[in-house]
Image (tube, rainbow, N blue to C red; front, side):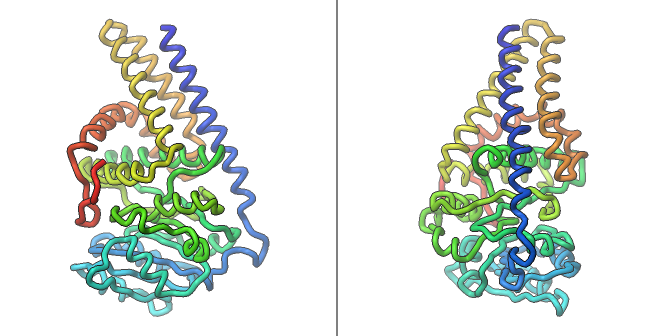
Length: 371
């Protein structure tokens, strides 16, 4: 019992300082990110880059949301990565008033990283926003974006939207990671970024981009670019305001979910961020000890104490993550945290095994390296 109390006390303190204190520290930081009048990001100098490959079944939401925007950037550049479906024709159906064009990768050019860089080279702007082809923009997105101060990079929120009970578990998984990222940003710096909603200056990109160091990975433009900016001591800010969020679908099955997470782990591990690695190790220790305590109590027949440990730990998580879920208007997903707590140890074991037995793909292309 002493070990149980010690574990729960340490876990409570860790979660409180990382998630709760970090959350409010980051909220205070974000209040200073709004620029003075007429000093924010110039939308007439903002280019939005949208790489796509065979997205005819998922690009409708993006195109519809673009048509409904109240304010436009300088230009949307859609980069076709050798699509073999009707995506190009769908993009060409945007309203006439939408400033856009389609760029095609040539033979020998492929992948999201190449698509982004081709669009950057083929355009002129002071600010660049990358988004994915399967996301949805809010009507006032660019109006709010224009109020941000000019810095080297903004990591903006990318939120999954569940439609079915199973998908809420997938959504919770990402939201918990985002909450940790926010807590870390409040204390020191963010460790994750999403290319589905990433804003950076052209000057900083030209200065810090190191494509040669990660060209072997077909995905991961976001986290590698964050690493390059961090190494160059660029000014990087995390912004969690839901008005600047984009929304996308969750994976539709466990297979798709596991496949996605393996791909994320591959590029995250390849980045070799000491802070991220340390946090992953600490999480593994907490999970191992928690499962060990509960299992030991169940084996000894002390079901009451086992349930007590589970509900206390779950209660800590539910309360600690509430402010973040509320800020992102995902309270329904927040209710699924207890169910996620039950499945997480099993999911962790599956991921650990498949890391060494399965090679994920991205847009029909296998990742080049093993984990």
